[in-house]
Image (tube, rainbow, N blue to C red; front, side):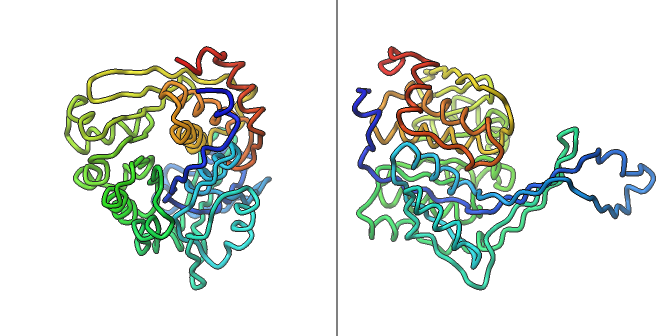
Length: 329
């Protein structure tokens, strides 16, 4: 990929269908285990005083869109939100994310995740689906047609019924599908996962999710590869791997990080870098490395949209990790 391409937007559109949410993160300055009595496990009634509280913008579509915008792209979100979305909407607009097709439901609140973490990194989490439950009402195909199509469509975690609809509509619209079920592999059964993934240009999962996908669909690794053109499997700090139906594998190394602060949102950032590379017709090896660099920025900060960088800073970090020769690998 030429340097001029690396430093300029692709001029192509990607639809990102997925969740928009608020993350309400609390820190408990103790240990949950000290307050759970084994003989009273059947009648837990606990209240914690927390030492830190942060309300942060999140949701997979929002996170992916934000990091793509940092690289100069203009992703278009396909999502639902509640009456409390105004400030978040304005934030995304200021970053360069297209939100015209985010439907706001005034009788709902935006999906929210409530996470309390103790000093041993144990977590108690509650998730309220809110307006996300209405995502299945959105027609991705109608949006694509009204916007003149798209180079790719990413279907990220959302209401499971919405995810299946959007995958099917991307295929019907002739848009290359990138299926990103992530943690929703737990909520979806085998036939549903196959329906969503079949014929996709790419499926992206971490190694645990890939194993769950395989177990639920009862397919061998070879049979699974025939479902989509490419599979991208991430391994956290060990990097990632790109697989195809012919049995080929491209190993992607991780980017070095200055300090591990919070891994939340690293997967969304990886997808941002990877898809940006696809939009710019980069080799898959470069796309994967772009994902590695984008993910590194996120784990060095608290929050999924707390990081920031210019395109020049991004490519300087890319070169420091992988060298200029990696761009033609």
